[in-house]
Amino acid sequence: MKKYYSLLLLLILITSVGAQVTTTSDTHPKLLKTQGTGPSANVHCSLQDKSGRLWFGTTGEGVYRYDGNSFKNFTVKDGLNSNHIACIYEDNTGNIWFGTMDGICRYDGKIFSRVPITVSRSKNLLSYDSPRLQKEISVDSYGNPSEENAVWDIIQDRTGRFWFGTTDGIYRYDGKTFTHFSHNDGVINNSGLPINKIERIVEDTSGNIWFGGRTNEGIFRFDRKSITNYKPDGKNWLRPVLKDKTGNIWFSNWLSVYRYEGQSFVNFTKNDGSCFKGSTFMIEDKNGNIWCGNDGENGLCRYDGKSFKNYTMKDGLNNNSVWSIVEDNSGYLWIGTRNTGLSRFDGKTFTTFSE
Image 1: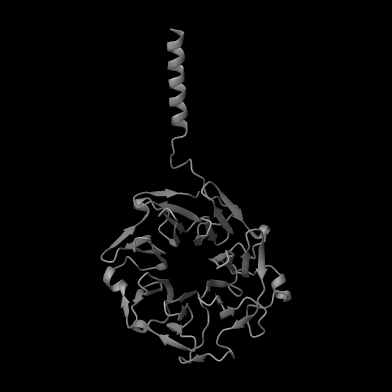
Image 2: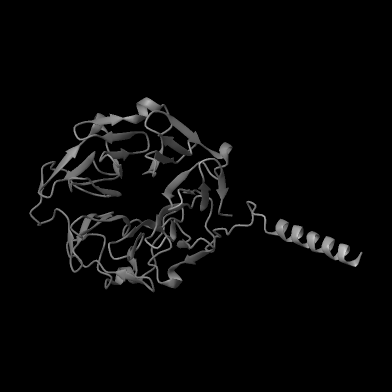
């Protein structure tokens, strides 16, 4: 009889332990705020590095790194230039670069360090020896940091040269020296237009560099010799946001999404109604689906080459204002949203990884 009760007790204990480790939506790690930002802050950019770790840059909470088990938060106390992160990029050697509201920061796997821009031509991105940059970043009436020293996008092209999209146009970096693009460098600007705030940069399969952003007229293409300007449907500004697997380049602004197929621009906003309206960011997943984040009511949009589908808070997304998307090695989509929100999507279910 004692053996019977002992066996029964053991079965009860095993069952209890199994219940305790059952995974629920509340047992996984969460991205927690540490800097006290409000609902207008967002997870603005994301990256999976070569080692498989996920990085999430925010507008006010610094950077979070997720190793599959826990989140680690990095802020100015850890060496970041600013807690407002506009872009994240991993270079050919594994260094992680951050475009911030206060210039460029680089992480070598151990420490964060400023990358000084010392181009005398610059109006805004002054040398870090400048007394002005020793002061705290000024803020506007809404408490947002000044964009004067902002770096919005970073890429490394096929030759190894870096391109930085900034409030003061484009800077190039060969590993030793910064140059202010199109100023006394022999580049022919066929458009005759000034190149101002550049928010996104994309290199196409032929090595052409596309760039654009607000305050510019249309979009620009640099073929290594000269700059050509395009204005699809007479649009005032567009950003290049994606090069897909077929080599097409996708462009967006708040109202429209275009795809450039080598000869012409196709307006997708006319075809899909409102799914792409308010576009902020786009990626292509492993299966060739195009995913678009939107700032507004449209949430997340998927285009499979034939039809469009919206995912919103009604489907489990934690916020309808989507600002970043990254696909991890397992095929999960990680979606950064307003209110420093983070969701993971497995194709069927959204799981919230933030407060």
